[in-house]
Image 1: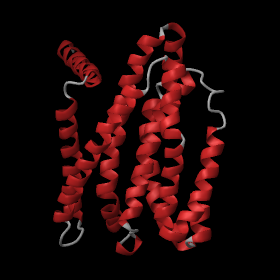
Image 2: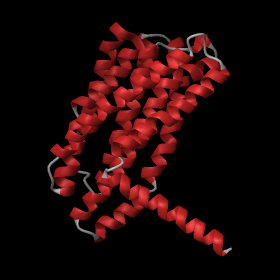
Image 3: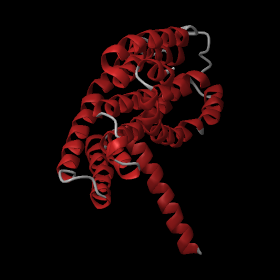
Length: 269
């Protein structure tokens, strides 16, 4: 509905400009969803055989991986999207930075909900919250029309976030924890009270560095430099912050075992 409302209340030109942004973010989303999409069959078989306590351990590990991937990608989108558009299409195709911010926020929220959707499906929680999508869609349309009158495309994107925040962002975690794993949702929500400010701080730092580098304009070489910094700095900070986290150690052991296996196999050959 966003493109329809943008076309009707903001202008068809803005639809064309915004489609370039959606093209890039949707491509990133398509890659990342392969991670959780590949897990659905395995998770279904797992929950059919194992108890919910061990299943909740798997949920925390997958959710942590999803947070790292989408958190890092969100930082990259905010920092690099407008410079990339400038190099790819030209300065005239750029949209306001507020559009980039709201696009990135919706991207991160979609990633957050993606893990919950995956586990809700594999746990068979279909009847609970069955009217939730209708409520969110209706709320999104109404808010988009209202917000578009004041803030244009940014308002329409903000309406998408607000509609999800009113329903999905609190209901989906509660649903999975209460009916899926029979545990409290409070520890899960408390984690995000730290995670969100953590991502915000890293994003502000990378944007500030990129602005210094792009001070004299966006060039191919300056874009490459900012891309390298954006790829390295957030992951170093993620590593320093979560190096003692059990979920991180779990995935680190997997990487180590695979590298060791390849090394042994190479020596045998």
